[in-house]
Image (tube, rainbow, N blue to C red; front, side, top):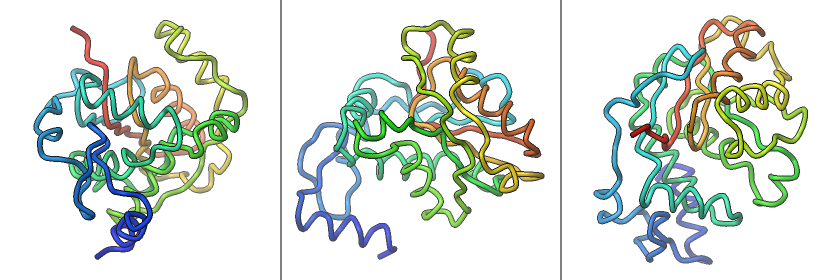
Length: 217
């Protein structure tokens, strides 16, 4: 067993292992149940790459059981999806991961982190780093609490993200290819804004990978 698998097995001794998509009990080494995995609407093509990114991948559509799992995670203290999302991104974003020299994540504000009990995208990114051997660096920081993105249009989302984040450790990404991890992509405004910041701070290229993406009908 790898270290992250050992941690999961140890945790299952105290809390039963559950499928993040339906909350049913599953085996100690399983990340999801087969029924839910088969119901995910995988994306062979994410439709479009958000502006500012040099490459992009989304595992599946943000709908059905995928959406339910994300919402459970964002309600706080429900960490089963983190391992599943990391494994799915690591598998499906392999071409981007192979190109990346550094993995980072869209950060979570302090208040939201306290509310959730964790910074979800950072935890997903760190686990992807552990699974793939690519180094994780926490290079982005929150400068102000973001307004709720779901209340904003695409242009307002981008402006909101530009005000909310800054690059705190440019030396970690200067001249390097960076892969930014997030849980969900709606308009791509946040990833695009983060990409601009990283590139302006010296990154050679910036790519993005997420678990789920809202796809326009």
